[in-house]
Image 1 (tube, rainbow, N blue to C red):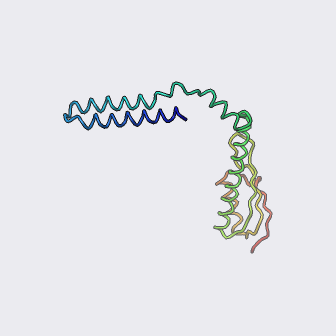
Image 2: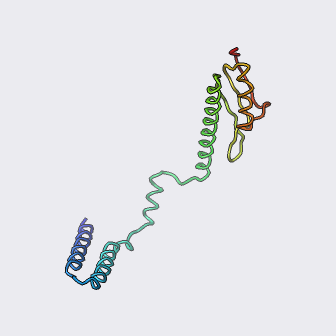
Image 3: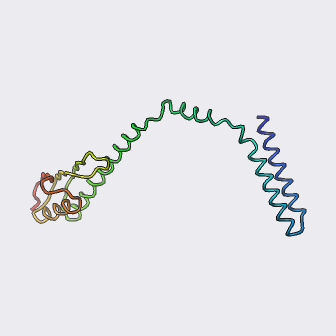
Length: 160
């Protein structure tokens, strides 16, 4: 604690001396040189303790806080799981909103492929769709999402 107090006292003293030196100089030309030297002196005093900092202890401490080593494969698996979850949820919501715009009430269940970047490959649509809404919603799923009619499973009650 005494070391920190000494360090802060040195920083404050150098800042005060730099301010006094700049205040005492009246000439513009010499003032620029005094400001440059004062600034460099302050920077040197502030950065003086950096070479003595032991960063190896810091990295060991950071790893010990986690309680385990960094597992890149686990992070990649978690990323893929979250990505799949988000794409599935957003696609289902997108289809349901489009159906709602058409006046139909459906729940969508999307199936994704197993690629690195998952895309929808099949959909199951459950709900109320009439004979006018069905072709339009089916076309939307086919053209907008690239899911062919053969991969669209419709479980519906007709609403006229």
